[in-house]
Image (tube, rainbow, N blue to C red; front, side, top):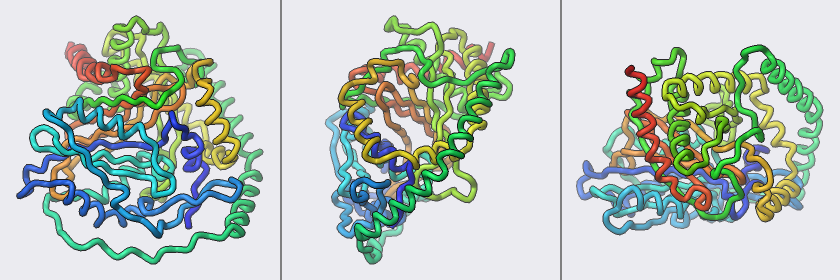
Length: 466
């Protein structure tokens, strides 16, 4: 038995039919080096042999009686990998547009909460004999950093594969009794309530610190939630989803960041996304005069928490300089805004968001989020942010699954009510893969936005050269 934290549970309470709260990875593999190739059966058997290495994948939820507190995880005595690993084939030519479309269909469907909260779809029929694996995992199970750390268990650093039978399953545990659950819920609720007043005082102090800093002359500010321009990206959600992919060369990103002293790879990514968004919105006649505001998830794990499952995540808010035409000036502005956002985020306790989440009431929060979604309330106020931009570090060396080489790894986050675009970025080997998940009704042509990323980067490279 393992209790969910308040942050883990919050991703369950946030979930509605229009707002599934899982993360997705579309990984593309080249099996050219494997004699006889790699098909569904080999991938299925490979996953079956490795799944025990990622304990969250064999656990299911148990809710508290009457919703008195957050749920718990227990081992699923009826776990069957066949319920989670599925297959689908693309018609010719099997290009990226088709792969994006099937990924969007998979990402739009919620996960079955009566089972462990994950699925993997083997997508066959890609061009050049390749195949893809679309992995879908609920955010209540792992955040992005933990997902990268845990999912690496399915990969090898050499193409050779040692085959063997799946390991025996450990003895299953009996579900706790209602009395045990109620006792645990009562003790946990009292503990969290006792810390509410000190937490409120610390948070108020952090807010005052940010306000004081922003009052200083010529002080750069980060983004402010709910103080955002209206754009076509921002409205109530439906169940429709669109997906697109893009890629940038990592070495060139590292070179071009030198044009602005102190700039980081992440600053370049933000500036390039801002450039692509500027062009996209301007073409539609919807470019606001002020910069967009992006939420950027931040990993708050300490060194001794590395490798642990669950969510240890916060968020910083930064301005995306979509209002600046010059690519180099846009990078300078992105660097200044991101630096300010980091400084403001550091003024809050790393655990503040986690502790506030512990106070969330399961019944009330789930009811409120469902009502908010059903009434399309996100259409009636300014969006909390305009979009989410997330950056995940990936390995710099090649990976293999069942002997097939991983050639692309496109991560996809979630979108939430009022925020219809998520751009998630992951570095892998010599490139940076970008996954775009969008609300189908708000950004139906998200592929055009994704196609604008290499163009915006080329503009930056050309401008930096002069």
